[in-house]
Amino acid sequence: MPRPDGEGLTDEQRYEQGMAVRREVLSDEHVDRAIAGTTELTADFQDFITRVAWGDVWSRPGLDRRSRSVAVITALIALGHHEELAMHLRAGLRNGLTVEEIREVILQAGLYCGVPAANTAFRIAAEVFAADA
Image (cartoon, rainbow, N blue to C red):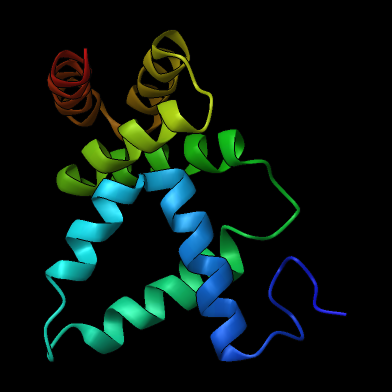
């Protein structure tokens, strides 16, 4: 029997599992936009992130989605991946984090990732939350 972490699944099953998780976390609208923007150049990458990031890692039972969102938001702040940060702030809300909890994640990240990184993250969060209000 296939496991929820992807072990024992075929590539097609991992893709299907990954697409389901990707849609739940990021929204149908976001995923549909990403798929519509897929080109010959990016097709293999879209397949890869769906199977591996979403079908394998995000599908593992070891952490719930809220915890995964905290980890991802922190990593994106640390690495300065601002476009992905905006997307994952929305995902964090979809995964059950509150605005107040995200504020605390950004504050905590500021301590370990630096004040400029947190300052930018707060700016992005304010834009995301205002747009989604």
